[in-house]
Length: 333
Image 1: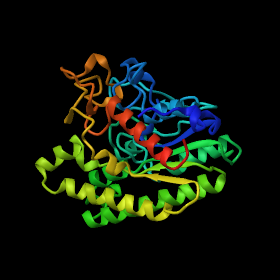
Image 2: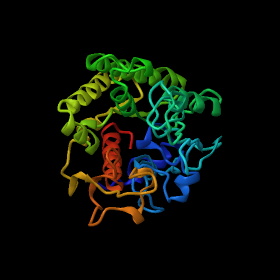
Image 3: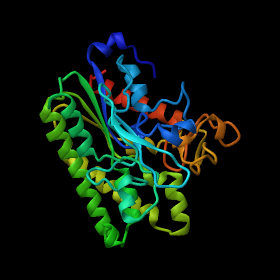
């Protein structure tokens, strides 16, 4: 789909793109140390041209600058992995960070998990509430009303509930139904944050994407092969989150809630939806350091997944196209 910006406002309607979320929207928070040296920084197939994630691609559609990472750094406690101090980047509005959850800093591979005795890559994983607070602190406590604000998070709450299921000492839920209920609470909390920390602070256009189909990822399919029913639990958690998020945001002026869950179930654009594009690399296969030098063999250009949960560059383009179509329908583009 080709959008003609001059016909529907484009850059005249927006002055910047502000993004909150997790690795799906992270534009380079951890592009330092070993990650940078390995040619990585985004959770996709990294490249200087063509490796952009969906928010960067959407910014081009809007005619505004691509978002840059509002904070960078990495604090690994893994042997042979180097990091860098955590520093803020004034004038950058890409607050999304890999492994970020809604309110809990204990995301996958995060710094916070090191307090539990785990060896991790030391991802900052600033929760959504803190990301939003950081933007308000940098802008005098208000939005100017000309930003497009994007919000996409929740999958890491699913991953961590699954990882700590039955482990109360690590903060895990006692059982599956309790984990599902906790995801519902997380979805409601994100909706409340959008209303109180974004809309109420002056933003006029907030694009919120719900959690995609995590149960359809190679990660979930691999788990379900060894433990039948796991994919169903994952889908129940995602469903609870998305239902609660929708309940909080339906009818809220200035919010466009887009159904990324349903969109991600459409496999028609892809040549392969089961395998991953990225091969073995310096960090074991994660797309964070995936690039042209460590791809799996064959034509992976239209694979859906870069690694076991993250979209390929083509998948990022499909997501950006979806977001743009939703904005056109709403008269926002």
